[in-house]
Image (cartoon, rainbow, N blue to C red):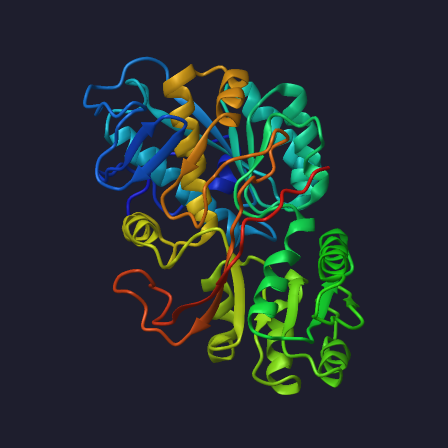
Length: 428
């Protein structure tokens, strides 16, 4: 059985059903500070300033809240975030903590529900957390963000891409992986233009995320050489027959299918595209790769492409992923786990430098630029918390082989298709 750090849960029954083990470990990590840029690596743990911490823990624990989906729609994303945050806490604690204080992760299950998410967030604040990370759902992100501002608690979104999560006055909410929905079409257009693709098909879901991606495609592709034709707006499964939507795209001669705006329909769209459209890439919705390949099997090979804030090809990611797979029961380290690890790393750095006051932590983070383990780009933010230098990578699932020890879900691996130029931050 793999080792995980001890987690505190306010929703104990739900958490125990999902956390498969809870005990200590002996892995190590490194955090060093240089000017305003913090770089992480994987050898030993140090506190900010580069002084190795070896003393025993003293003082009250530093509580960091985790609010994510652990029982409903986005559970495969949430358990990745959970283990990424737990691994960072484990490694920092094994090296003596932050200025001698241990990190404790306090869990709330958001259940992909706005009201549950807000209630969970408020409970975490009452518990005394210095920050909250892990939000996946746009529904939860939009509901929790104004509460985070009101309660002045640093809050980190992982895959909550709704533009409603940030306002021009936001100061306590930070994106960490998925940029705002209006930004997501730019990497798709860049790849299409790089490949000389002139005709793409687009399918979006008939709810907020899908409509946001639809608007992003319309705004971003305007004036380009890439034609997207009529965007197909499809209902949400289980009662959806995607055949007419995919056939319309095939009849239009699409050289690429954009399914980023329809997360629930990704598997069906990929399967139908193989029969109706042919051997063209189908872009997914920032989904854990092992989840997709597990559902599609060989249909994913050479066809399913998706975006990531993690750089699966870097030495930094591969070193982190090796430690993660020795720690977690997940079979692959997704970018959600990389983001979770990074959230705890950044909060620990802030506490080491300015203490555990949430307002001081937020102000400190706004002035920092982080080179985090496993990330595809620098982590920094605009004044309102949008990613300031996002450069997601676009990968294609191929036959592999996977680097040794980095994929317990199979021997498939990633082919790099493109890395985005730095995205212009969306301004609310």
